[in-house]
Image 1: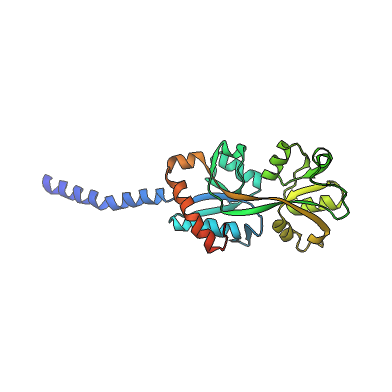
Image 2: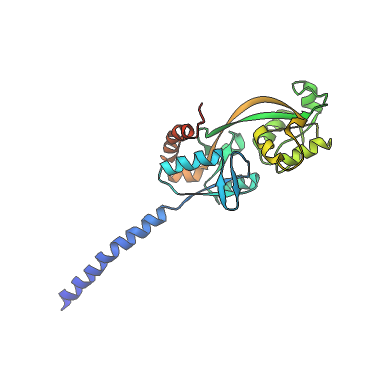
Length: 244
């Protein structure tokens, strides 16, 4: 009888093995948590539907790796702080910056965006002059690399609004002399505002590659993840017709 009892216990343990291993697999398949912001046409969320140029590339890459992803839309500054505090795995799309490099590692570029100075049509400011750099009152979006770059470069950044539309309104009301932003994003945010993009003078100063910043702690647990992620980017950029 004792032998029969032991055999039954052994059979029961064998039956539990697939359940235990299945539980471990499910735990290891937690979705990748990435933060972003409302920045159409690059990333947007409307009535629960997500899309945009950057979203499409990132989702393509993650799906290529067989990884689930959850993309959360937040104010841009908070999106980054949450990654720094371990509440998310990464944020995108982002420029390289020393502040971000302190707690995260950036992927290869998923998109590129232009940096554009906006002034009023009747403005006398020469954005290339030293006087503009030292005396003009300028604005940049809160939490953006535009702002930190301007400040470290010696510009007078008095305002950090949450979006491009607010900067445009500040410019029209003479609260600032200029702002640095992206023309495609501004064009989207001006829709329905009664303000036209042609009301402003625009000067493009450079094109900036943007990637996905992953927290250093996330990459420590997955040492080969970044190499695989970067390897999948070119194919996904081509699929979206984003050629280098």
